[in-house]
Length: 185
Image (cartoon, rainbow, N blue to C red; front, side, top):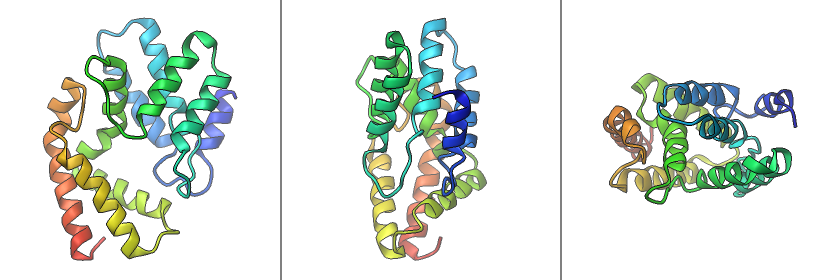
């Protein structure tokens, strides 16, 4: 797959959040990360490009399929590590000492710690991606996901991202949870 193929995949119908804008936002955050070698930056760049290339909200194996596709298409010297990083986006949990994993997961989750208006647009876009799910079931599932993030001691495994995004992320999660429980979107 070429970059053009990746762009086309992210432009597929039904991608209201997991689209090219998300990739561009993530790449923009990667540019701000200091102290990366050229090889580390290349690996993270590819992980960002490939992490949501397969996205079907009716499936539970998108991350695995994206990882496999990246491993098949990328050079062997980086494909395995890119695949490993992509698989972390399934749970967004990282082992201590996994710096690249911490950076990728923190970048991917950064939307949680944005201004309330941006967060609300993100939440609305996610709801659109799951339009096939009845409202009550969506609210319950979404609330479960948000509660799991809120229960973590730290949402952002990279300390620099935690410093910037953690407080606002917790505020946004609490606000959306209250909205889901109150019956308003």
